[in-house]
Image 1 (cartoon, rainbow, N blue to C red):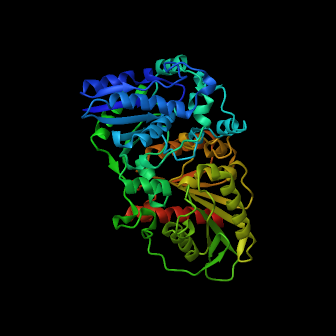
Image 2 (cartoon, rainbow, N blue to C red):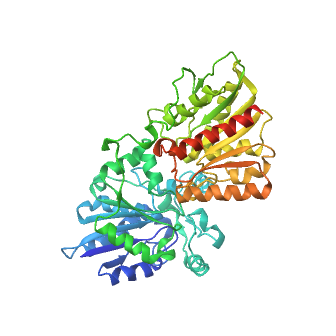
Image 3 (tube, one colour):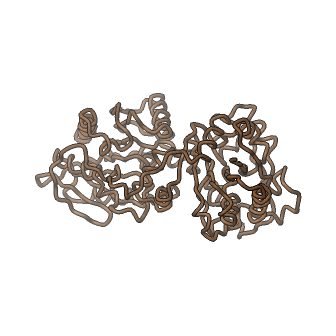
Length: 504
């Protein structure tokens, strides 16, 4: 028999599982919920003494009680914060656990506190700035503050009201105490249930595996399975039937498996560029490569800015990826300098230093005597989209065009970026007459496509000069994924649109 032990996230308790538990039970599973100390329904005790170890002990108590009966496959499900006590308990009872399910939750690591997984950057900074004190509690969110802890997409008004009314204060020690693992938990089969209204889906996770994210590469090598739910952070309240179905399939070993690097096929981003572009010599200075056109110049220039986050260990680095080298060589053959840049967007917290790297590289390109510093275009890709916000908000006179391919134009909910700096959808109203060329992939990931549509709606509202080049059958990264005639023609049209504006 499959036995589910369900562990709720921050501020919540067993009550959130009622509908999901009922559906699992109706399918013949046995279901238990772990009540965590200090969270309303949990065991009573002095709040100051409650930490992550307390909650690990709470989960262990349920595991040990359930495990007394033989012939049961125990599946531990941790939602959000709940994955931390789940992983801690599974590490100590690895032989008794059949599977761990990470429900819209991260991958806890040894020595790292649960605070590191709190989505909101300013909240993390505030809580970590108390000198490490673990006493006291964090008040539950007000009704309009739940998005700081995860997207409320899919929740009815009644469900959001109930979440708010029943929420309990979170003991600070549970967030601040580092998790301690022996490593035994790595042998326990695992499944991730990704809520695409709150963060990346499977396709984006696979992309991160392809570019070498060490943690995700490990998951691919371990054969971790994945499911997607098109909802926000609380699927047990927004879509309990779909969640129950995913949990049952996960317990049976189902789900999507990531493709690892040893599959024998090059990752998508390292496949050939879709156009047959003659090779050109390049000059490398620091983090910038120049592809020079024929003739003495000065020539206009297009600076290509990669997306990400890209792990620092990734090799080759993005400026050597076929998409960027292909575009740079292509525009050089048409009379403009092509420049590719490596920047330090290694995590979603790195946008500020990535913006500094890009700005410095642009000035380096403009200062080259072979470049006409009054005629520059910037072309961004994918996760580099948020970096467009600075240039849209205050476009310099020499910036003649800004382009973006399949960009993320609103930080994804799970990123936790605070403030408005890296939000192109808000910056576009200040773009004035700056021309924007946006290349839209017709088969874009849903979580990214919605940011593009939000940007286009705002651009239309404020009268921004935006030309859309559609690739109807193109996927994210279509230049190396979809070498079709339509995609090739879209690339040519996009380059022509940029160079026309650049030379006007």
